[in-house]
Structures are given as structure tokens and as C-alpha cells.
Image (cartoon, rainbow, N blue to C red; front, side, top):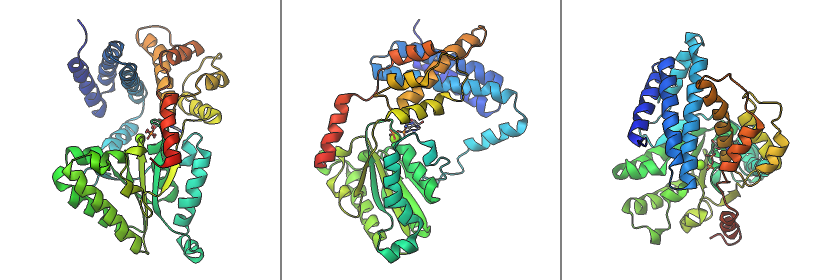
Length: 372
Ligand SMILES: Nc1ncnc2c1ncn2[C@@H]1O[C@H](COP(=O)(O)OP(=O)(O)O)[C@@H](O)[C@H]1O
Ligand SMILES: [Mg+2]
């Protein structure tokens, strides 16, 4: 009988529950079973993309199961720390706004050196040295739109900027505004901007901003028709409050869907393209996502780097996880543990074409040229 999502869900819920309760032995066996279920579901996926998503879920569960082995043998203090990390203390009352302290900076992001430099010049230095900026008449804060194909590190980059600036970071999820907060969107936006005004340096980041700001004519949603003008109005109010610095950031995979009003001066007017990783960035990605795992002597990062041209950062992370899952599953099944071999990696790469197609990039080039 084919496995069902219900079975997967039950196993995963049990596994995650046991993990949170510190019962790592039980957690591991449920998580491995859930992962096996998901691998089967991946095999019956209706498209390559869905298959890849399911494989990634399986790989994450395996990572978590592997964590269980480590935690089982760790002293109890460590377990405590894990549980603390899981709680929601960073959440604002208005759920879709998360006041968080990002933990990674520019050094944790592979490549994108020109992007980092552009952000430093335009946003970080004026923002970090407001007095100097004032003397020289350099604008402080403002709006930045990060755009580019999916999985290239846009969300990561926004969080890293907050870390670099040591600014308070407000993360808005449009999906949650749409699903839960429809009736309260206006109050919540007001609350958000009021909070940001009370901080000396803050960043408001709207991820997948195209979901929040569809082009007006194409979307009849009334909540959006009220929310977009309100955000724009709040932003304008902010420009006049000279004593506080606000960086307004948005990220999108589909910049051409944005409302033109959102892109006008004073709004998301600085645009930064985040593209696929170049060769040095791919090398760094391999170091980040494979470096900490046991590797066989034949694993050749240079060759992998060439083979991974056209792959995004998220693709490379997923490939590393899936490759690690191969010897892991074997050893869970009773085999002698062995390191990840080049053949494991090549097999996974073979089965996973790049998620971004060259034809997708053409659309971005057009946007870069025409702004549409
Ligand atoms: N340049 C990069 N450096 C390090 N990790 C990356 C990079 N790009 C993508 N990743 C990995 O892929 C995941 C997805 O990236 P994300 O920032 O969500 O992409 P985007 O927002 O552009 O769709 C990240 O959490 C990270 O683990
Ligand atoms: Mg993202």
C-alpha cells in the first residue's frame, strides 16, 4: 500500500514532539520513519519540483534525527538550551511581526561580494554613522528591494544586514497577514511602525513582498487595497522623523509583480539584484554545507563546483543534505558507518537539476533594463 501524508504527518508530529520533550531515542526512530515515508512520497511526486521539495523535507528530518544521536550523549544543560531556542519569546504580540535578533552576518553568506559592498555603501555606513552622514548630506536609511531567483540568499541577506547594523529587526510575513490577520492588518501595521519609531535604528523587512503588494489592477483583494497605501503613508511619515533611522527592506522573486507606487523614490527605491552564486561562491557554499560532515578522500570540491554551475545556494544546501542522507540511512539500516563519497554527491546532483532555469533569468534581465 502506498504511504499517505496522514501517516507521514503522524510520524513527524510524534518525532518532533519527542524531540522537544528531550526523548531523543523515540524522536530518532519516529523521525527516521517519517523521513522514509517522505522519501517514498517524493518518488511518487507529480513533478520534479515537488519531488525536490519532498526530498528536502526528508533530508531535514534526517538532519534532525542525526541531532538526536548527538543530543542523547550530550550533558543535560545542552538539552535545556535546545528547548529554550524553540520557544517563541522573540515573537511580538501581533504574531506576523517578529522582532528578532539575527545570528548570522555577511561572513556567513557565500559570495555576493558586490552586493554586500553596495549595501555597505548605501545603507550600512550612513546608517552606522548618522552624524557623519548628516554632515555630508548623505541620506540615512531608506528603502531597498532585494530581487532575484529563489534560493539565492535574499532572506538571509536581509537578516545579515540587521546583524551587521545591530538594528532591531522586524520581519513581516505577508502570508500571515493574508491568512490570519485580515481584519486587523491596519492596526498591526500602525503598531509595527510605532514600535520602529521608538527604536533608534530599526529595519522593517517584508519577505516575499510581491505577495503583500500586488499590482493594484490585477488584485481585487480589499485588505491589500487598504494595506498598501497605509504602508506607503507610514513610510512617508518616517522620512520626516529625522532623529530615527529606518531601513525598509523587501525581498521578492517576482519584482515585476510589484505595485509601481512601492518602487517610487522614498520607498523601495534602491534595487539590488541577488543572482546565482559564481564559482568562488559555490566553493564557499560547499565548504559551509559539506565542510562539517564526514567526507571520503575522493570528494573534490573543485570538480563539484564546476558541476554545480547554475545551481542556487538553496539547491547546493539541499544536495549536501541529500548526499549525507545516503550513508546515514545505510548505517541506520545496520551498515558500517562510512563517509560521504563523491559518488553519493554526483548521484544526488544527477537526480536534481538546478531549480532556476536559464529562461527564468531572462525575466530578471528584462526587469533590470525596463523596471517592469
Ligand atoms: N549565498 C548563500 N550563502 C549561504 N547559504 C545560502 C546562500 N544562498 C542560499 N543559501 C541557503 O539557502 C537557504 C534559502 O535561502 P533564502 O535566503 O531563503 O533564499 P531566497 O530568500 O533568495 O529565496 C538559506 O537559508 C541558506 O541556507
Ligand atoms: Mg526568501
